[in-house]
Image (cartoon, rainbow, N blue to C red):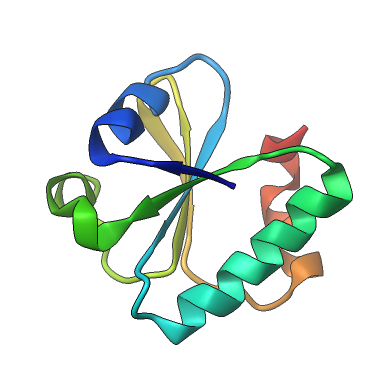
Length: 103
């Protein structure tokens, strides 16, 4: 997982390909569980697929993108929000939901 700043998040979300941003907080227990699931997916795919943004350090970006809670997984392409996920049921569930964007 690639940790990014608020400024980098703005730049990354404007790119042509799909980019997945994992918005979380270091004080959130559910975020830690979700992070482990995403790390497992990356290990399985043998590739970094997610960008990690600490919501505490990026309040302007979080507010501009209307993040209502953490953890939140957001898919962007060419500056447009394509998908948003707040529930992290299981690794198979995440693969099903995010599969089209991971290819």
